[in-house]
Length: 276
Image (cartoon, rainbow, N blue to C red; front, side):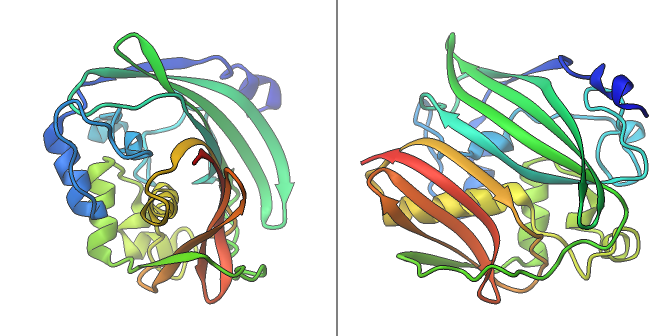
């Protein structure tokens, strides 16, 4: 598809309403190891990724398990889809058990040439509203990669950490995170597919779960901080079942650097701005 045709997708929008169900919060809690919020209490940040889920019917799924392209998101034939990164502004608390809505808009489409081949970047802007007020503003970058071998080896060493948590990405954990996000992307649970069709040596850990665990580790080390803005990006995939570490350090007042490391090199990194 030509660049002109792809640009026609800019401005496409969809709205998903959600009751912010307490039972689902309990399922997220049991997967991520945090207490479940009660009615009207704030959800931990980034748990909104487990809500506002698109319930595509089976016949509407593509061969990779994602909803077939060419609807809300542009077609990207013969390319593999991954989260590249994003930016999240926390404007207020998202409360459990209180109805909310997310409006998503395709805001940018850019074709680039990377070291592993052609890359199509699609940016989607999300606005989450609750009780008539916007509480989250997010830009999410999705990359469609030409079917070439993925980058698997890190080159940048992990810095000295002020806090660290170990994540053991078992197949059970990957399955449960796929379940709570209604994510049918086969790279997270179908080993024959991910190794034979997409060229990975094993199951791929979810990018959103990595970002969530990076922030969760920060919150455990800095429980009184009020989060304001997160900017994150993936450098390379993390492959299960080898453990990885979510770590970070405060670079200056109100600014923390977060990262996920494996074999002492970076795989994902983020900047988190907060108020003490």
